[in-house]
Length: 227
Image (cartoon, rainbow, N blue to C red; front, side, top):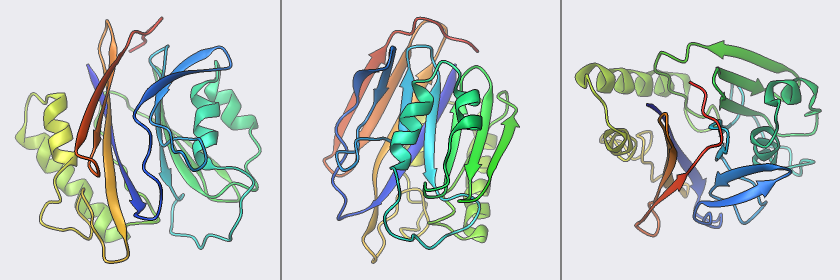
């Protein structure tokens, strides 16, 4: 079983995402919570058992320059709906897209970063545990602290269940500024926790809407699942 879990941190002025629903994009069935503002998403999985997660920013915090050509959440949907996502990322023109980090699992595990000028591809060991934090929200020392919290959680639990991972992501760890559930004076809050649970027979998306105190669990039977 593989678990991929993500928190969505946004300003309270941004509209809440719609609950996870299945859509057909091109010829591929995709399950994701939709951002009503731009129509994209930060977390999606497809009928083949691939999962894509988006984080704002590349390597460092950047100054947004206003209007961009396209939402990063729509870029993610292009990738997860592609039969050849790696090739798509290689050929995709991103010059007028805001910097982002994309984590893609499609049998292999890939970290892709766009810093506004250049693309960076980093294959990762899918047998190991990984954690990311948005470069636009957290300083380097905070990112390292969050990595340490995650490693401590892994070390203290020999067999980890999907619910335990959601609980870890739903804990502010005594820090509403930089914990996993944030509530900053600037208006930034953690809106939700979303998780894909992949096993050999099915995949399930679990979505905890923290703003409305609602929980959704949506099964999604894949046509093919590659581990």
